[in-house]
Image (cartoon, rainbow, N blue to C red; front, side, top):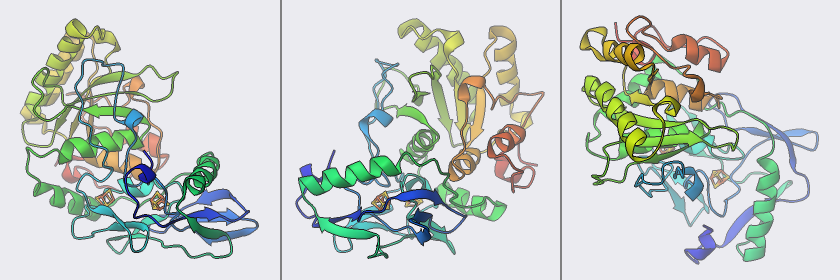
Length: 354
Ligand code: SF4
Ligand code: SF4
């Protein structure tokens, strides 16, 4: 939905003059750079009409493959509401006191104008009079900008938000430890990370009693038939998550005609459960008895994959871990194409805590 339909406080937006970027590149903790003509210039905010850094679209937050799933219609990109529109600067602004540094807003910016440096998120305001121009916020202006951003979106480039480290992960996990377990923040965070990784994802509407499925997801591309249920467990009760996911598979099989063998179900947890907790034994039992491989992903792994614009394939069950193989480090490194800079057992991100 265009902001034109919602308010009349916008005055301007930004468009390229005549030269369009031919390429975009980004290094960690820097805004992206655009190749304009023969020159690399630092990217800056285009003051998008319907800013993707702030708002998800309808088709991203619904999964028509699950018609009976009643989903939350919250379009916020930021799970903690730390980004807002400034009508003074006509760019988004980030409240760093609220921001947890998940990078979701940054990796959705088509020109890479949001970045993190020295533990602060920033939005680059318009810099180059030479290549961009501010135009009045009118219907024709909006159409012009949309046309230009459609072209920019065709450039294949990878966001490099920030390189992971134990310290960065500890900060994010610490920030999340203050979150009320009943709030929607964990579910919004997981939903939006999966959307950034190229899936459609819908989270259960708060208060819905029809099913207790936390979320469902499906492939975005028409050729990708992957779909599945998700249990999101940020508390300590991960054993419950392995049992609940089994319940989800059964409900979807019997009530919604989603064949159990088609269901690429997964559990997303804050930290990998400890071997002694029994979670991975249940996951192994499910595989042995029913032939279903339930994948386990941690929040940290989802963040690392998102910060690097990784392409993942949940249909291949590449994040399957069980009692005999308690790690997703190798699978995550395969998708990153490099070694992960997280020490073994750190926060239970890639394997159980030491
Ligand atoms: S930060 Fe990026 S996505 Fe957000 S309004 Fe600016 S250009 Fe658009
Ligand atoms: S980095 Fe995450 S928490 Fe911070 S403003 Fe962006 S979306 Fe919100």
